[in-house]
Image 1 (cartoon, rainbow, N blue to C red):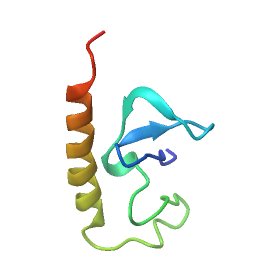
Image 2 (image 1 turned 30 degrees about the vertical axis):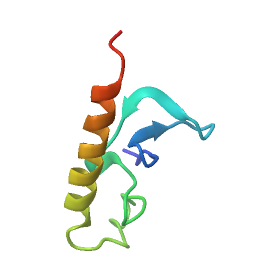
Image 3 (image 1 turned 120 degrees about the vertical axis):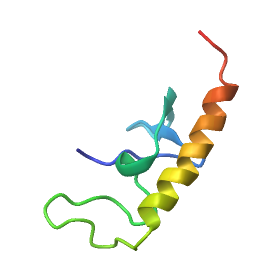
Length: 72
């Protein structure tokens, strides 16, 4: 599965470079501090603990922003 680009609000970014409405991302599928995952060789830039940092940090950011969204 490819990694999903995100902005500082934890919003998933579309191919056009704009955030996708009401779609937030965090954790393993988000491109984080270690860069894109490479399924052939693993993540060559992996730094111990950055997966948890990304997941907790962007998870919190995403949760706060989702809570501020107007219900549909």
